[in-house]
Structures are given as structure tokens and as C-alpha cells.
Length: 285
Image 1 (tube, helix red, strand yellow):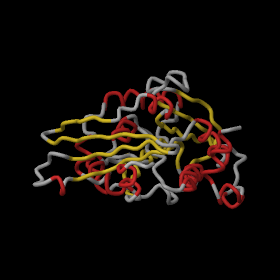
Image 2 (cartoon, rainbow, N blue to C red):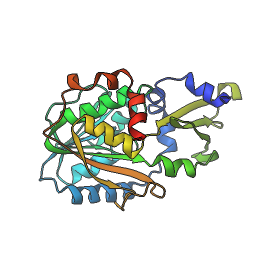
Image 3 (cartoon, rainbow, N blue to C red):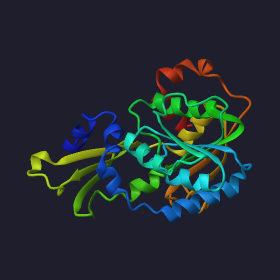
């Protein structure tokens, strides 16, 4: 039987479109560790060894904390995000080698344009239809120059689910956020209730939700293979430690654009008809 929270969530498609533009999203996550982010980016650059001035796309850039780090290293950086509020904040730091634009990652964002594409801090797996996840990876592959790399930083769903804190209350600048988390066969979800923001009654309190697909390394490997991206390295945390399926908090993958990649019109018809089933079947092999 589905819980009331799950039913409430299902009534809110495209949850990210409203939540990421909310002042409460930026307030709740305002204390993210920028120092850790800078060290993570530095380690990735040490591993990738890009040429000076390389073009880098920060896909799902949010307010631009990773983009700013990359630009400070001298790279030509573009940040792309759907959230108008995030892009407005990010644009305050634009400079000659750092630019932002608002766009849905499901829409094409270039052909042979970027040396590297970074998709960091679980900025993937948000969509109702798994075919749209495939579309995003195909867009990435199209946008990369030959030999370019995708860096995709995702949660390790096994680790996250085993340590899921079901209920939690967080206070930020006088506002209390009550968080409820749960997992089902396909998603890990979070309900965010703002219970003390000056509103007069419980009936007018704001409630938002987050939902991220439970994609595994096998799922990503399958998506990469279909789009001509060869998986080169897998790490388990922001220090780039080896990946452990049970113990690692993160699933950080680096894949390179291959010469032998299928054009979108040549992708298997069965995959396009039912990508979710194809992913499940592949994971069981």
C-alpha cells in the first residue's frame, strides 16, 4: 500500500522546476561545503589533465560553485541549468571565460562543442520517463569533441538507501524544514515541509519534494555504451577513492567519447520503446 506522502508526491510532476527556483531550496542548501567542492574539482582536473583554455560545460550548474572553480583555473566554462533563480545567482560571477545560460538539459546544447562535460552533485535522474535520461546522455555525447570526457557524479544508491534517515528537522535562519525520506523500487524521495516561515496556519505551509532515480553503475554503463561513451574510471568519493558498491557514498564516473558511437536514429527500437525495462534487463545480466 502506498503512503499518503507517496500519493502526494506523485501528484507533483516535474518537481525540480518549482523546487529549484524556490528561495527555500537555496536557503536549505546554502551551507554546502564550497571548500570540498573546490578540492573535488581540483582532483578531477589533475586526473583529466585538460589543455589550458579547454571548453568545459557544467551541466546542471546550480548557482555555479563548480563553474567558478573551473573558470578560476583558466578554462572556458559554460554553466547550464533549468532554474531561473539559480542562473540569476550564478550570473553575478560571470566573466570573460565564465558564462551561464538557462536551459533544460533534455534539449540539445551543442555539437562537438566541449572538451569536457561535468554533471556534478547528483544533477541527473530527475525525470519521470527513463527515456529522457537517455536523451540527456545522448545530448552530452553529441556536445563533446572527439576524445572528450563526461564526468558524472551521482549518489551511490546502495549506500544511501542503507543509511536513509527517514525523519529529520533542520533550522536555517529561523525557518524550520522537516524532511521525510523513503525509497521504493525505482526512486529515493524526500519531502520538504516548511513548518515555520511566518505563515498563519498549517494549511498554508509550503511542501516540496525531491525524487532521484535509483540508477546503478550497471545502468550508467549501459547508457554510456548506447551513446558511444567508454567508461574509463569509477570513484567512490570526492577524494577519488576506489569505488565500493556497498561502502562508497558517491558513484563518480569518467567516460570518454568514442569514435564508434551510434547515431540517435540507429539506437535499438526496443530501447526507445521501453528504456526502463531495457535498463532493468541489462542490470540483471
